[in-house]
Image (cartoon, rainbow, N blue to C red):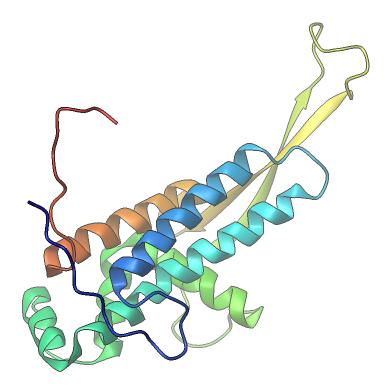
Length: 199
């Protein structure tokens, strides 16, 4: 029988979300919204909507670190550092670990911080991380309707780092998967119930 969780106390400056798992669900929702917008961005100006969703994904993915750090209190942090085999128990060591161990989170950190401050010129940023909008052109074909435009442009969001370029979609999905596995390892998420239904 599944466990019924005891709700956490409401946070005084947050609407409804109280745990890292809640923020993880928000991240998944944002990734799906980003993907839907990216799949439908052929109208003029809709690439900006895709960019809005991308910013939300990067910010939430990076802010997961704060939520994991603060949620369990000192005992949970001590357990976390022992599990990660880190000597210094401080937030700086924790985020440095995350950036070293997740290419996606390293990118999300710089994109989130760059989005907040407009330019990211401070110490600690990764000079190899860059966000880019790439425009693809699809020309009209023989089968196109007579009143169709001569070509159609669509925008793709790409993230560059020291290991090459990837779609923002892949970066955000990887960040979600990293956090999902991390929270499961920490005991915040129970294993999924496996049924015979394939959904």
